[in-house]
Length: 450
View 1 (tube, rainbow, N blue to C red):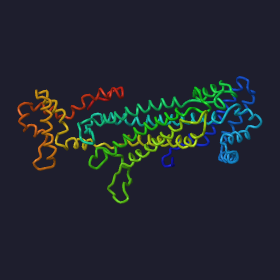
View 2: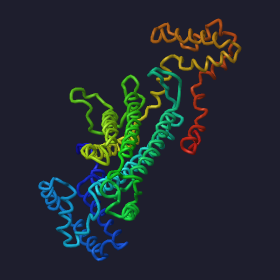
View 3: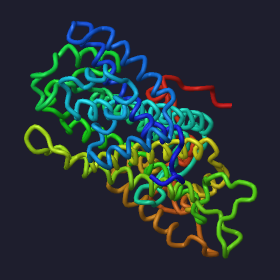
View 4: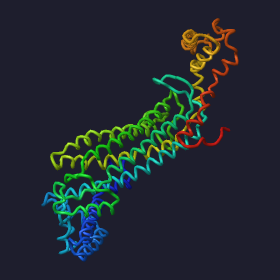
């Protein structure tokens, strides 16, 4: 991911420095486990830990350059690191990596990094949820028009719209927790995963210290169905981001103007048109969501490795693991900030409700006519006729409102009292069940309507 969309806190997780620190921790823990049951001298394990810790604490660009220098010759990244580590530790380094294979280090390290990245993503989701909850309660009783097929349907609450997105991100948080659990596994089983050269107790020891659990059957690598499921979870979260971003983009359109992104002092919308206030954040989020979702297919294709292992997955994961988590991290934090500062225009929402002359109340009027004794099919015909008469004359000098057309209709006049039509055309009636939904979503109704 380019620096423009990279937060340093997430980038640090995927840095070479962090990767090498984790590699050393895996090797040191394995030595401590072997010392515990007598496979290597306890003093050697202590020396490896002390000298290795000191080397990692002083780790610098010179050490990175040295490892790269060794790898240029060996053409093997793990061997290059182990050679560098041996230079720091001395003779006791002969016990490092004893009975292990490269995948034991690489796959277990990747699990640790993915867990670290996921914990940051969970914090990001909490920020999104907090912003959505606050704005949902703020606009719980803000009337707006609901749309289906992008056409005015019936009135709803803007807070209810946001509550729906909150519920989706709450589900996404649960999905990410499940994905974290699935990816938090350790594999230290040696060549082809048989534990022929290393005791299974080493794997259990390392896993417990790293907050992981042993892989059931590692075959030398951790099965990639776990990683595929993880990236599917990230993709679903990205789709939720895009759904909310798309809503904001539509609401900010000049013809709608019900809500818009916060426009900073000094901000410019166009190099040619000074009046422009564009939804650049939500458009950016739409693009980032596409990138995150694009990692799903490579992750799925990584599942089918040859026999006990190959490295066709390696080059893919070196790209999608950092880029997927970095991109989603940036997108979630941008979304949280965008929703926290979203500018809402309740008066324009009400104006849009009223803009079609009242036809948005056709559904409730249909029910009112049916309750008045008119057959539903006849009631539908009457309501649609008057709604279309209103719709087609909007903006004309002789235009009549939906209410006026109904009252002039002989099939309605005298059969439906004025107070019944009043109730049917009261937008507030669409808010009567808000407490039910808010309690289900948030566990509370919030303050009473003022």
